[in-house]
Amino acid sequence: MQRSPPGRGVPPLDLVLLYSATSGIRSGLPTDSLPDVDDAAMAPEVEVFRGLGHQVRLLGITYDTLPELERLTADFVFNYCDGTGLDGNPGTEVIVALERRGLRFSGAGSWCYWLTNDKWGSKLALAAAGVPVPAGWVATDPEAPLPAALAFPLIVKPRDGFGSLGVDAASVVHDAAAARGAIERIVGACHTDALVERYVEGREVTVGLLGPAERPWVLPPLEVQFGSAYRDLPRIRMFATKHDTESELYWGFRTVCPAPLPPAVTRRVQQVARRAYRAVGGDGYARVDMRLAADGTPYVLEVNANCSLETGEEPQDCGMLPLAAGGMGWSYPELLARLLAAGLKRPPATRQAPLAARWREGEATVHALADRRAGERLLAIAAADAADATEVLRDPAVRYLAHAPAPNLRLVADGDGLWLAAARRIRAGDVLTLDRSRAPSQLAAAAVRARRRAGLRRR
Image (cartoon, rainbow, N blue to C red; front, side):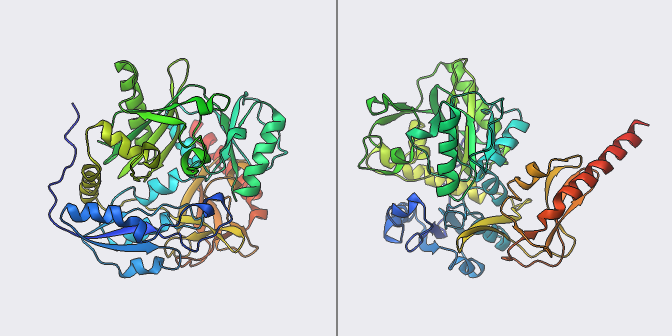
């Protein structure tokens, strides 16, 4: 039997609602055309928390206002900020600042949020934990040949996308020419690499979770059922499905929660969701999106940490987590109260995201999220015997590092792996650089040392 979820028994708090203030942000993406978020747009959430007895303040966050978090005081911070950095909105940086200040907050910790922002990085973590995921590949060049192991049909989407950015009917491809065209659109328009993976035909379900990875509260599966508007189209949620109220695709689906699944399938879906949540270090809350294949396997497409909490009069205007909470019989205020209570019980962070990408002045860069001393190791990025420089340089922690002949990062190998380490003192916010021309030789040297160590161990 699952434990009882956290409830309303929270005393009145000085509560700050953080949100991504989008007015004036123009990153050259289709999201620029979406309605801006400002204090007025947050009025429904303010009303809910005041109804729960809390004193509420609003703070809109952009890269310009991010330093205000260093002076923020509050009993609790409800964090609605959501951004990849590449979309013009800080996301991981906000959580790191809250962790650094020791403030209590809702949602994912910085490591989980950072990992799940990268679809490829999180796919690797899921696969390593034995969670079923579709076979995939990262494409940086439309002309690169597809791996032979990838069989059509495939789906092509941004590696760092959100809200189905860059996903439309042409994203599901059935031959190499269509795949090249889809990859070219993603690489050219979304400022990111393309994730190419096997397209899984089947029912689309999602499972919401909240609380710590060891003992999360698992909501009933929610199914997305596609109507006649998708008759001649892939049955997937596209950018228009989520954001274009003038499109028939926006109104052409419905959600059912609990999903009409046999009990055994429901249990398996929830078990896989729990394993996926644990594999990415889940805490706070998240949504695990899956496809049920014909053989009954629930393939995890992604884990969406800090997923949308939007609510509205129509299901199309709501995030999936509030709809799933409704399937539990929870009202919207009850869901927010439980997320708040879960955040109050969060232990101090033991692992923080070390760096973050940012789209700035026409290019993607990576910057440090904390001061680092010379020689300090930031992040493990490969096994010690890794010899493929191309794969390592495509690592989610490495791919946007600028090249510099006198870099502030270097590759360091030890008995367990290859690390990014500070070549000199680094301050929070500094753009991180790496001498990419030396990376192949450093990787080769690491592989030689690993083979020698393995030989000594065999003796």
